[in-house]
Length: 441
Image (cartoon, rainbow, N blue to C red; front, side):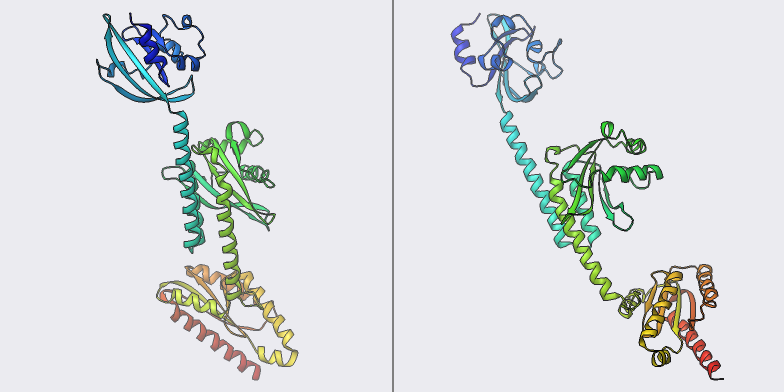
């Protein structure tokens, strides 16, 4: 039908795969030595009179991606295909021609597997480097810690083509891991607040198994959560199939865990989480330093309440706001006399005792604005709630004979805070004057 010399020169001399088929019947007429070596075919009898889809794709019918319909006589068609049997990528050129009354299809393919892997590696490395650059920018340029961490978590979701990423911080006092930051891809359901109390316990137990780890763990929900049925159901409810978990440590101190679920891409580069964790650690330490400095700068050393500087800062923030404010002025009667007669140490102890009593009723809303004065600022507080808290405080004060306090309280709605402060101060001053008059009588 055609000379062996042509077959040898054109097909076997080609440094790639090549084969010839009958266009109408798909019968293999010849395969070159390169393709035979890929298929581990030793003799021509192994493919003679067999269909191309049987030999090349191990299928019993023509391939769904068969390009025959796209071909026309003496025109070249090019395309790329992954062959699962050979596990390789090929770039093909094929054409149709007639010889000895038959319509034949000739197909040449160049193995581009190594090139494709090289390109994929370059793209993956570029993506990886770009993600790290973006994380570094978030860490260095963003002053808001929460926003910086959210930006980093977003980069994680992008890199892994995942659904969610999160940061669990370790609370030393509660010995609990708390999800402090979560990023959820748009159109994906959040994972907050869906766990039952039991599942929360299981979550803690499950997360703590990574406490001493120093690697990125790939967890398959279907196979790795046998011991945690409630957690398994919670994950399945959100269609979570896998999770990447990396424990964050600094100087051998466990800080927390960074995680991502439903990672679809770049699983071979999951160690990127280790590098990203460095950015998170840096941000956590930065926040801790800022919080410590802020605490020192805004806290009264003796009582642990906010100081005058913090008070002035809050008033500036609320200066032009009209809202519901409850203000309470508290002064310790005759503190100077107590210091002079019983000593500064006793007076300091009394201040601390009053601070503890105020904190019991008004938590962290207390400011020590001078030696003997405290101010409580309750924002966005309804009148009935404010009056209830004040009454409870005043009732219990009656049973504290060691504390002699003058109190001025005022609640206002749609008023500026400066006006309410002034009214509360005036009420406190009036009661303090009454107290002094009674003492002198």
